Length: 113
Image 1 (tube, rainbow, N blue to C red):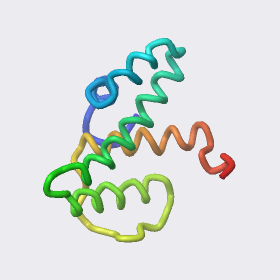
Image 2 (cartoon, helix red, strand yellow):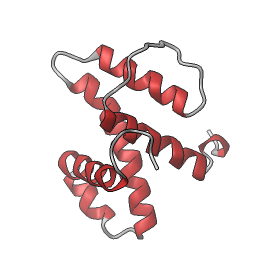
Image 3 (spheres, helix red, strand yellow):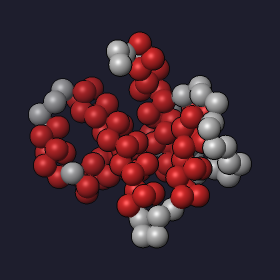
């Protein structure tokens, strides 16, 4: 279960909402995927969308991005390149934790390229 302070069902709903809100066509296409694949796609999309949101914001939220990035780097076992002490929002921590768990479960570290 993700370490962010939201429940698994809240996280799944949050991921689904992010995907459906920002990419309705891809979201509807993903409904044809097997459940396990669809859940992984939701996890991946939520992670990249939330990271992108910091730069889409006007004005850009550079501090928020560095909080997100630092937490993400630590979650996947990297040394943060621009470490900050503050944590991202609970929802973002949950999204990052789910992404890191997905990476461990399907071995992102072993993928080519």
